[in-house]
Amino acid sequence: MNSGFGLSATARAALLARLSRRRDGAPPTEGPRGFRELPGQREMALIRDAAASLALENPFFRAHEGIASGHSVIAGQKVINFGSYNYLGLNGDPRVQAAAKAAIDQHGVSASASRMVSGERPLHAALEGALAAHYQTEAALVFVSGHATNVTVIGHLMGPRDLIVHDAAIHNSCTEGVRLSGAKRASFTHNDWRAAEAAMADARRGARRALLVIEGHYSMDGDIPDLPRFIEIARRHDAWLMVDEAHALGVVGARGHGLHEHFGIDPNEVDIWMGTLSKTLSGCGGYIAGNASLIEWLRHSAPGFVYSVGLAPALAAAARESLAILHAEPVRVARLQANAALFLALAREAEFDTGSATAHAIVPIILGSSIAAARYSQKLLHRGINVQPIIYPAVAEKAARLRFFLSSEHSAEDIHATVAALIAIREEAKG
Image 1 (cartoon, rainbow, N blue to C red):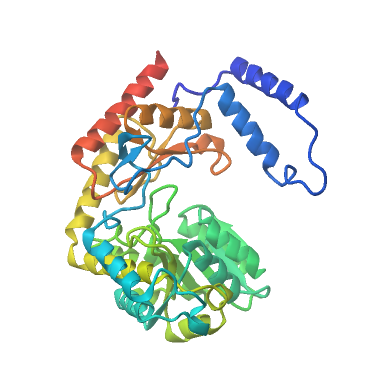
Image 2: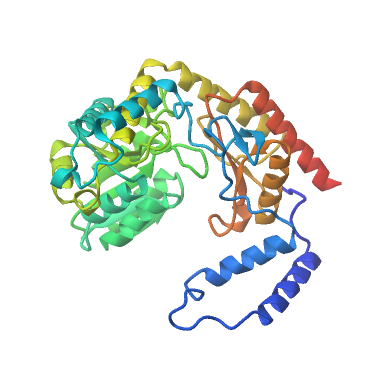
């Protein structure tokens, strides 16, 4: 779409000329012991200068003065909040808070050491048992970071003689794990199972082991994969299938149980389930659920587990209680999905580009310009609506967007008001 907030060719030339003059008058760079020549530093400085020249506020690192759910407070202003992964409103639920406080009273704030050495607490085993039961797998293992879970598990599981095939839109944590592994890497066009089949068929021969990696709900585009097709591909090519459910747990499926529930598939058809504790489960950390042999091997050998402090007891307790509430109160999932469906329908009716989004929790508004995305975000905040822009180089410039995270805690009025604000800003830009 033409947002009206992009720069004309003349304006771009003038901006580049101003920035060039600033660079010409810049102080000399630091010596070999300095940090200003690190990769990306010049680009970051250029972006900061460009934003200042265009009177754009920094949309990142906004401080929230309380619990960030469907609503929040930023700089003293109450806002409708679309910048949180608190999908079911469980971060701040009194039962979750009570569980975390009880864990602190009994175990303190930290696990204090690696669980293998001296950091094990009964809460860890209880959470892992609950996660394994959720996925109907033999076992599960929790880590202190969701990002580190993918890095250490993929990096440790696969090696230079192996093959990893993954969606082109897979999360950075997965690609970092691929890089660490040294395995041969092949990516396929986002959410295209036919391209995945072709990539696997082309590269599988000669590889010792193969891993196919997809997400349950893609955080950038808000869509989901055709799980049955990817299971077929993995089986046909003797590959393991790994599904990252970071944004799918609590969101996808009639009860929010995830991608397997959505498709009515036995979760044991997937070899490795990965997820995070920081979204629906309102804690921090990550998990792997799967075969007992795999989990036992990771427990004794994965560097990101063996050599890292154990998950804080309070976070384990909060995540376990959140999972229990998810199971007991599916109405929260129904509210979330209804809100996402309403937002998506209104946005499309207003002819905003929402890409391939489905009515689950994440809906992008693709504006096709980083400047437009930043300006929309700024103008929305001034209207009491918080949403983050996703800009180049995180996405291609033509794919620059606003990314809306829906919550069960949003009201229909919140959603109608937000789409109306988007329309008003678009009309303002045309003027």
